[in-house]
Length: 270
Image 1 (cartoon, one colour):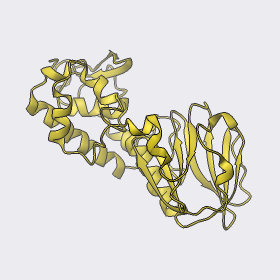
Image 2 (cartoon, one colour; image 1 turned 90 degrees about the horizontal axis):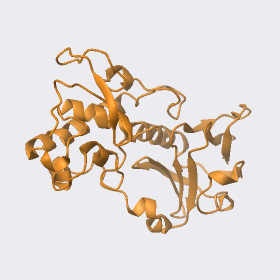
Image 3 (cartoon, one colour; image 1 turned 180 degrees about the vertical axis):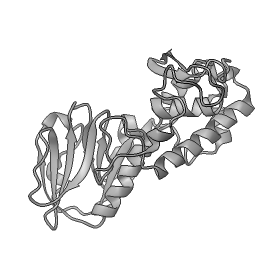
C-alpha cells in the first residue's frame, strides 16, 4: 500500500503536470469507487495545486473544492497523453485542456475517490479524525503523544488517528532504527527512546521521499516510474536475512495484525 512517501511523491509529480489546468470533462466508469460528491461538478474547474494529507492525494480546485483519492493497495493516478490506450481497470477519467487525461486505475478496486465542495472535507469523519503529520509535528510532541498509552507501539504507529500516513514499511524501518521491538508497550518505552523513534521516522520518511518512495509491486509515481527506497530497507521483507547491525537472523511475527520484521538481538522489547 502506498504510504506517506509514495503519496507525497505522486502529489509532487502531479502538481508539476496539472497545476493550472482545466478539467474539460469527467467520466466515472466504476460508480462504486466514488465515496462522496458527484463527478458532474468537476468539468470547468481548474486544478490550482496538488497536495497530500496522510495517505490521501488531494487535487485542489479553483472553487475551493477538492478531488480526493485514497490509493489503498494498488491504486494509481497518472496523466495519459492524447490517444494513449487506457488500462483495463480504469475507474475515473478526467479530460484536461490540451487533450491529456487524468486517470485513476486500480486493479483490486480497494481504492476510492471523493469530490468535496468548499469546506466539506472538514466534515468527513475519516479526514477530521486524522492524527498529526510526522513531518510537521515535533518529535518530542509525538513521543509524549504515545507515552501514556498502554497499547503496542506498532499498533499506534499504524493508527491513522494517532499519526497520519504511516504503514507497515515505515513502521518496521523506524522501529529498527530506534532499536525498539514492534510488540513493545508504548508507555513502557523510555521517553528518550521514544524521541529517537520519531526522529528516526522523520529521517527515514525524508530519505524515502528523496528516493521516490518504495516500489514493492504496483507503486509507480505520476510519471510511471518506480521508487528506489526499497534498496535501502534494513529489515522490511527481509525475514531470515542477517541483521545489518549485528548479523543475527531477522525474525517476522504478527504484530498489530501485520507481519513485522525485526532483529531479536538489536530491538529491545519493553
